[in-house]
Image 1: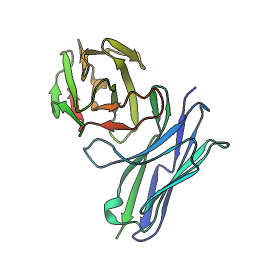
Image 2: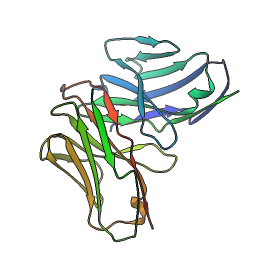
Image 3: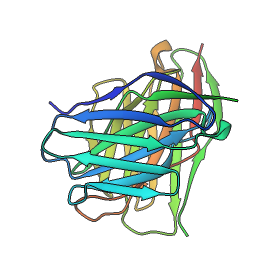
Image 4: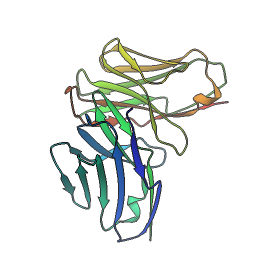
Length: 110
Length: 114
């Protein structure tokens, strides 16, 4: 069935270090992979996405990579800052649904 | 620009009472609409999605129902709430591209069933 696994569930890094969150999806029909950041008590906010015809995408300190053969995609945050602390969700889109990972709680320690 | 509204922001209801949560989207036409539930400290569970007026797909069997009476209005309802219905309810929309599309979330409704 449709499933997205996300690791790790929690991640603590020192300010300035990099953070990497990994996801694996099951349905080969998935063609769009967004990442969301959720702060406490708020709705998730789209921070970056990647489509199946692209292997890597970067937006300032955030990058996402996609390996369609292995069905893996990852979020990379460089030069982490305290305001990056939040819960991050990956998702895989198959028409018309978005299948979400279980989330990663990122803590950036000052 | 597009905006998504949800209300109420918070709600406390007794077990067995009815529920109605409303979501509206502005600035776009014919969106795909979604209802999710998020338990405390947990991930997002897709409850319902709709690709058009009156078209509702249910993902999880439960005592909740959804309706889409207008193009940009999505309503989540229950006739009798259970304790297990407590959670953070999120409405979302995406563009009807028939394929890959960005999805945007509302601010959410925190429901506590006592």
